[in-house]
Image 1: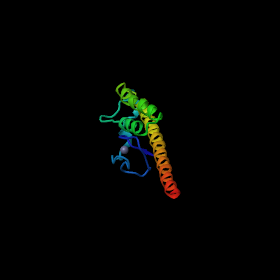
Image 2: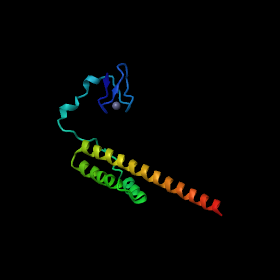
Image 3: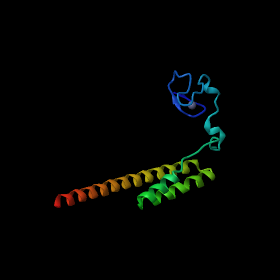
Image 4: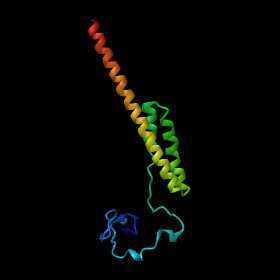
Length: 129
Ligand SMILES: [Zn+2]
């Protein structure tokens, strides 16, 4: 396995370029091992999506309690990132995303459900006339 020294992607043995970032893999031995640095420094420009806007929108639009954990996790992303806790920020980001989609899904189900009931009610009232 030829591990990319730039992004850590595991390429095929005969790969000459990283299929993930395009870096040349001709001299993998020259790359310093990641452990040698000792400190995990996020690459410059590292951004972890915090889904805060998504979380607020689903909470406001869907009015569901599942939006609350989404907002809490979303607000933790930037805080942890500033503290250098990249893994924690990533975990919070994943949790925020999960709760966003749960809120969004439940909101959609309720919206469709209400629409269905309303439609059936209209049809039913029309038939009674
Ligand atoms: Zn790469």
